[in-house]
Image: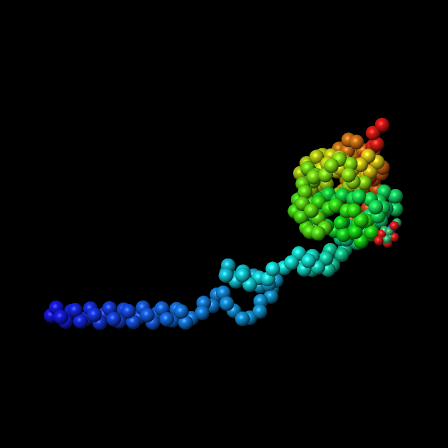
Length: 229
Ligand SMILES: *[C@@H]1O[C@H](CO)[C@@H](O)[C@H](O)[C@H]1NC(C)=O
């Protein structure tokens, strides 16, 4: 009887070893389907279904990304809109090819490209998030530039500033005496205009006029930094 049980146990363990071995061989033989596929994947069309698949996404260089962005109609339209605006400023004699220009809160850099295409050589674009090669990262409330190093400071994004008066003070600080600050703001009341002007403590108003930017009616405010006596 004991012998009988012994041989039964032996046979059972033999069977278990066989099953385990076969399973192991099958596991080795089968390629996992998740990570290796031969089909080419267009990265922009499909979202990865698993973290495994994400490894297929090609690295898109900055040059390639910019080429894509800069060839869109929206990009071109906005750059052209800025070009028109800057032509107006140049016409007033406030901007030349040799002006050192600062663009504050310049987003992805439409205005920087517009100036560059016009022939302006020395342009600095800053924004909280950088967009190389047009825009570097800097906080508009704390510009990393010495006093008076620019001839022109431009911004169309005062409305988005957390602290408008700090934003304005920084623009004014980095512009040389005799240089100009240019703001483009949404249409507003005379009272609001005075309020904006009052934030510039060392500049005099050169003028405010209606302009069109991105098809919207806006007001362009020009201020000249006073030359100390
Ligand atoms: C400014 O630069 C542009 C492009 O290089 C050129 O076509 C234009 O004549 C220049 N303007 C002046 C006034 O030098």
